[in-house]
Image (cartoon, protein in one colour):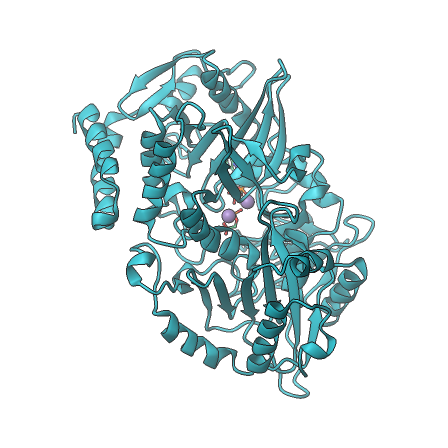
Amino acid sequence: MTATTQAPTTHEGILSWVNEIAEMTRPDHIHWCTGSDEEWDHLTRSLEATGTFTRLNPAIKPNSFYAASDPTDVARVEGRTFICSVDEKDCGPTNNWMDPNEMKAIMRDLYDGCMRGRTMYVIPFVMGHVEAENPMFGVEITDSAYVTVSMRVMARMGTEVLRKMEETNAKFVPALHSVGMPLEPGQADVAWPCNDTKYIVQFPEERMIWSYGSGYGGNALLGKKCYALRIASVMARDEGWLAEHMLILKLTSPQNVVKYIAAAFPSACGKTNLAMLAPTIPGWKVETLGDDIAWMRVGEDGRLWAVNPEYGFFGVAPGTNEHTNPNAMKTINKGNSVFTNVALTPDGDIWWEGLENTPEHARSWKGEDWTPDSDQLSSHPNSRYCTPIKQCDILAPEYDDPRGVPIDAILFGGRRKTTIPLVFEARDWTHGTFLGATLSSETTAAAVGAVGVVRRDPMAMLPFIGYNAGHYFNHWITVGKENDAAKLPRIFYVNWFRRDDEGGFLWPGFGENSRVLKWIVERIDGQTSAVETPIGHVPAPGTLDVEGLDMAPEAVEAALAVDVEEWKAEVPQIQEWFEKFGDDLPAVLWTELDGLKARLGA
Ligand code: GDP
Ligand code: PGA
Ligand code: MN
Ligand code: MN
């Protein structure tokens, strides 16, 4: 079968690429995705037929589905993720590299006939707005109906996007995905096809993505991490903008003053929750614009304008509940969502650790009977909900503006039991870049590997920088140098995860984080004060609003404390981290480290 016989497009570039891939992968059918409701119904029904999807009770979660992955295919695979730049130096010390030709030879062997017995889906999509000045098009080819359905939630896709690409004969990022499990004639499919061999590969010069062997979101929905972060970060470097792993929120004060805040936390460290925060302090309002990715450009007014290129939320399920994230609960309860690796309850609903109304029985993500007495988790720690952003009641109207919103503050943050105070402010943009470049966090279940190990995760982008991280730091420094610092966002560092001596969280987090946001905007507007410490500016005593908070003053103090001895212990770790980059590390970051050392007396 050739693509052209039924191809609904006149776009030569797409046609020839689809034909080329079809010849290599040899699918039984080719389906050009329209994005229509009929298509969704057809795909979700066929996913029910293969056992991939279980339809949830329509009275509880209309048009929603439960899926359980193969137990080995639950998270991003950083060890199998490659940046295949032509020159190894462009990949840098933090990414895996292979020569692009060598990689293509290996992967062509894997792709050879890999779609036999399957349908190949062609998904035209755009990251960001189709009406943007330069719409960022892509076409994903996949042999997974699960991926196709999920892409419809996460990205603007389908016929309308294809028409726009044709009108302008637009360039696009070709993104090829296969689960790597061809079917012989008569061979029955499995609920979650995948392959033990996995490759998630970016070719930065060609702006091209090849993914093989995994059906998990971050490895398979190629518009998200692969395009909107890894490939886009390379485009951003070349064109002078920023592609970042950041949420975007709109904060309105009781006096109706609006601020826009972007925040970079590593995977499973609180972005989705902060993006949809329900403030506990009276009169303050949060609206959301995005929960994972921000594309930011300096506008003609000198301010940094951000858009969310995505169209849905792909959120961590465990821990989400009516208290921690009521807005996410309302969003998913409207239906039209896919839940992966959570538990299925007898009434056809889903459940996960931390959700209210613990069921007496459930089917665990591994397909086993689960009760509250089980010694196993009902849901994988990286189980996810995939839900349309438009269903979010607190979506800011500016979400639909292709220009985006002007950012007032950038927050960096991670998951650290010690050392990092609840909040502090950078001295200036370069110091903020230093804080971002040295950001550290305990690893989480969002990636395959050990959990709870402290590692450097610069700007929360360690797994997503599509080029040499040393050059990426330099790009940040340059943005600060080439623009009016007074108009750029102020930079803060936060840590919701500091622990007390008993191992409990010092800070209650979630809705109470609004208190920290309040301090940040008051700081920006010069309405509150800070004390200078060796690491930056922390809230002056009494300036963090803790009214009505059930927390001992000593605990608040402990959450905000700067412990010089703990920071002295960070210094050699930062030094070792910086040494990795050799000459590629901007010299000003060494100067920043020297300054920190001197201020600490280290
Ligand atoms: P994301 O992956 O960065 O979007 O992170 P999420 O917002 O999905 O949160 C990841 C996990 O951290 C979830 O289990 C949340 O319940 C938990 N979490 C989020 N915010 C907070 C917080 O302020 N305090 C604490 N203790 N946990 C949080
Ligand atoms: P997260 O998104 O940041 O919400 O965890 C997925 C990921 O980064 O893998
Ligand atoms: Mn993420
Ligand atoms: Mn998230």
